[in-house]
Amino acid sequence: MSPDTDTRTERRASADRSPRALNDRLGQFTRGFLRRPGASPSAARMVVALLLAVVLFSVLNPRVFLSPINLQNISVAAPEIGIIALAMMIVMLTGGIDLSLVAIANFSAITISTLHTAVSASDPALAASLAPVIVLAGVVVGMLGGAINGFLVSVVGITPILATLATMQIYNGLAIVWTGGSTLYGAPEVLGAIGQAAVANVPLLFLGFLVIAILVAVLVTRTSLGRMIQLEGANSVAALYSAIPRRKVLLRTYTIAGALAGLAGVVFLARNPTASADYGSSYVLLVIVIAVLGGTNPTGGFATVAGVVLATLTLQVVSSGFTAMRLSSYEYAIAQGVILIAVMIFDAVSASRTRRPRAARGRPPGGNPPASASVPVSEN
Image 1 (cartoon, rainbow, N blue to C red):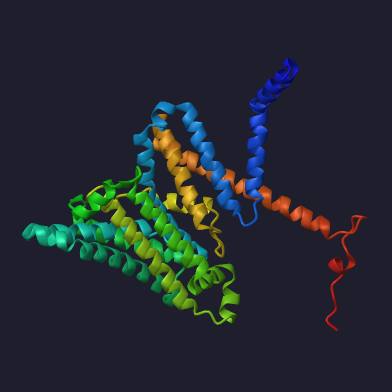
Image 2 (cartoon, one colour; image 1 turned 45 degrees about the horizontal axis):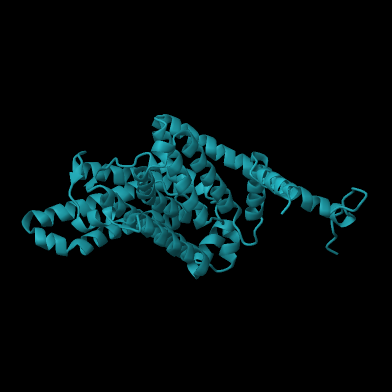
């Protein structure tokens, strides 16, 4: 090989490694991912946001952010928020909302802790053997809390935001009366073991979160109930004329959301064997932000589970990054709002760009709209 050939090869390789070439390559990859057939725009958008967040905090403070302990903390903290966000997503699919999910999760955790402590005080071995029953009782309490919400919304006809606001107050009040405002200590040992277990350095809690997300995706996209939930949120009038049992659909939707909140209460105890009435008080608005960021239509009818999972990870990465940068929780709250507004602006701009070509395709070369589009069609 001649020296000139070697020189040209080195120049070409240097050009490929230049920042501009890398930027063009990243842009090409992103555009290709967003335009991939079958790809959800909201999920693809959250992939980009997640990568940007990871790169940003890796550059700003790599020693703390990329440490194994920090990465493990992210994957351990994400499940409890993500499961509640999935519950919120299901309810928002119907066009509703559930403000009591965090209160239900705390109520389930308090139920489990109380039952375990009561049985363990007389017979610790019996408490250990009854651990599955005690955990199941906590999840059932969550289902009952969700069923009450569903009854108020579907049968009584109360607006979802008002009904769940009222039940949130009731559940919180009952939890405070039950615990006396203090923190309860004690939980089945099996939960603590699950909370500390890992498979190939991936926490078991995070793997469980992914399994729950897959089950929710199957429910929403592959079952008749999921399709009825989507149709109820997309067009309730059309759903009514399609003979969809609206009351049953709403009742089941809120009950499923309550069951997911109950599972989140189990995760609370798996992370930390304590329960209190005010745990995760900031989660109420956070899970709404996650659901919307993940592509859930606030008026109902559309949502993606993958988008919600990615949005959960993105906000958890941002939270961890802010902690690594020693920024306060108030600044993290500001960042949540900024991210939400940025995504909403991005969606509005994307929607306007999508509508323009369609409108242009419907016009003749002269630029005027077709006659059939401007002149009303007579019924006679």
